Image (cartoon, rainbow, N blue to C red; front, side):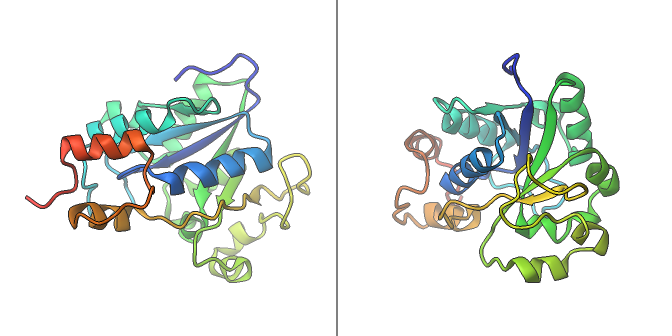
Length: 221
């Protein structure tokens, strides 16, 4: 990872990215803009700890697709930390690593609202809450009040009011709503669509779609 010397706020966005698609890119760019993040660091997982089944594409291919997708996007960075480390890396470990690399920057964890409701099952989740602010992307179906009711009380007490930014959130409101660009694509649907030869309807960046077809990813054996 290389970062600009003026980096003040860095968003960290992890996932399997299996494959990376517009639903990963556009909402995260909106969150960056709304919350005033300087850069977003994408961190493809090698073996995601919260997935019941492993990714359909290898870590090598998923990292390669992420690299293609981020080309030309000046506010997005890419880390090979988890892929090169191998095995399962927990988010708290990645946050510690990136914080050590960029001690001058605030590291903001970017997650989806579907992930927020299970945050209290993560390893060292209280450490994450104490050390980092969190930006929450709206994932459909999304209802802010139902999400508030579904999370642990310790998490709910930190939810910022709608519209709050990193600069305006009240003291103690460390979990912010980051909006969502109107993209509702899922990697699960894409894998199915690719396997079935369906029209992908521009869901993938052209370079990623070309890579998937060239490497014959997600096709039934």
